[in-house]
Length: 189
Image (tube, rainbow, N blue to C red; front, side, top):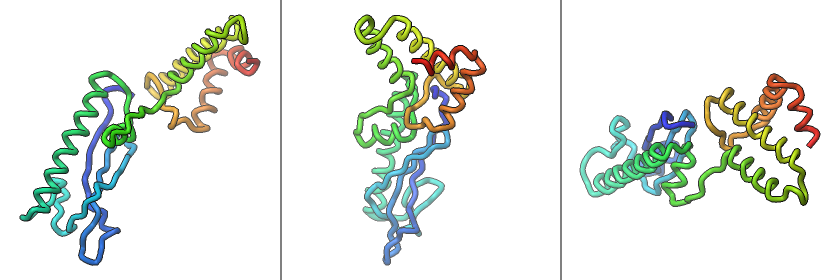
């Protein structure tokens, strides 16, 4: 995922959860590349006073000012967080933006960063638990994995949380296409 992610923010009342007074919980939806992350804002609004075009409460009163001010603050914070990822050319997801917004600074790990960490451990144990040829096989596999992610997904890396069986089977097919010897050397590790 590169700096040209599609990105949007939406505030909306969840009318299906309206109480008997017509008050609906207010939610925030962050969308990045078609994937969503939602969270409750712990506030309620009268759905009849909600303007879906401006994503704000319309009318008069202290609730309007308080809720609209909070929405403006959240928009600013989310855009600032998203801008930081773009400026650093770091990949990001809607879940990561939500996590940062909630001060859960745990960034999601990527496939290649995990493999790089693994290879560093193997290298440090070379001569004790691993041979140089085992280390080289891991480095070669990591490089093939990088090429696969670039070719299949058009990205520099892939979030580990997004890895599914299809990712693995496509990678195995990719290895067969690159060269049958690669698959056998990986299975022999």
